[in-house]
Figure 1 (cartoon, rainbow, N blue to C red):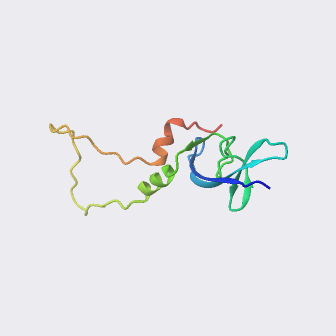
Figure 2 (tube, rainbow, N blue to C red):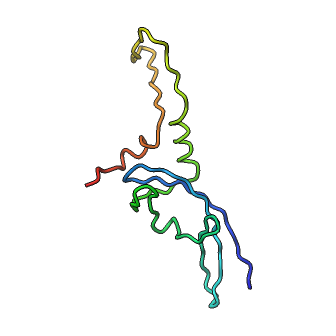
Figure 3 (tube, one colour):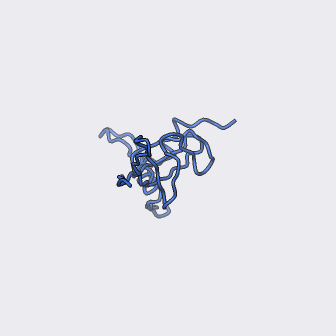
Length: 123
């Protein structure tokens, strides 16, 4: 029996329908069948699973309109969403203005912000 070459890959996924995001790591096993043809198997937790590159399925809504991204994209968006924001003490608040200094307002992007342009309302 020949040796099996194994490659570890991770991907981030985002559903374009519901906005759900997740990450998954795979062991990709490279095999050769009895006729000498090469094939790969994707394995997660010891179980062979379908290739995430062929027709990924949203874990939340079972839709197949899923964007595949490099690993860490969902985690970084999730981390940004969960950071503690400083709440100022009660009292008068000055509204930010576009002053003569020309300073731009900073925007903290969230996964939903990134996906907004791709989402459609479900029928």
